[in-house]
Length: 452
Image (cartoon, rainbow, N blue to C red; front, top):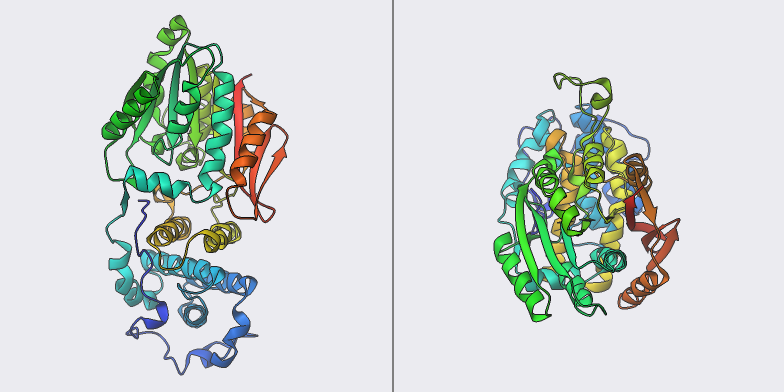
């Protein structure tokens, strides 16, 4: 399960006690398997750049997958000495991937040399989760535009879509536990025609993904209702226990049952999806499902979820997510994709959080969790299955949605928000969509959709 912990990664690997019963000794290590360009201890410095570390991780992954314990140990020794959890951003990134590979090897049981090491840091991986208070979480998500970008763009699009409605039903599928909603309430409260009645529905997740709250959704709802009241906005709050693992089926069913009432009352229906849809399994349903037609067999849960949303005839759907692809069934492809995306948060953290701060530990613990999930897990346990914007755009179009552009006012608001953060963050438009960038690299995208 996803977790923010104050010290997710174990102590540096080079401090781990000698491993028992390894197939080769340290003195034999570099004579056991000649490898062109393999370094000696004195030449490790030349392996410190990101490209070399990525190649070492790839070789290590291949060795683990092929059960080549000797080669795996050789590469592991090098990585132990160049990938410090307290080093620069590339070293910390590589350290996270190295430990994820160790965890994967320990799960498969193919490489016995990792067993002792896995046992050493097993307790660290099961440390108690840090649970945020609302104030902590609000402060945490404000540290970078990673979430604020989506909040700002989505809220602007939602406000435009809600003009003229006296009743608004917002379904918030958000990784950040409604942290977007207070700003939306503030904007709704100042609407010229007066604020609408707001009905807020959330999916009470059955899984734990970071960040995690230290209070229940019922308690959170009470606080949001009171906040809305302080802004002279009437809000109703409801939690529907629902799981991303089955495409939020119970939530969809409840919304479908209320569809006629919404139509009779002239309610606007807003579906706000903030970094949650990539937890819905993307694999095509297998023919093992009984009594299914061939068309259904070739449908993924993501496709079914989006088509179910279309059947609800929403006023607007806003989809915000990270612009990367973690869906490959090939471990090395997945490792490369994740490594070449997750350097971004490690690079940005140096611009806004000092070393040793608790917030930095929480931030990088989240990243460690992502890396471990992408690398060490398979099947239903591998829930970090990001897809790039292009894939989601095609999915939305296939589900009979039509993209709508963000207005110039919305883009100006996003730019103003970015001005509050470190240089390096940028904004670009791609067709109707907007994309957050870091040093020119795509980070997060925001899209808005209406029924076609």
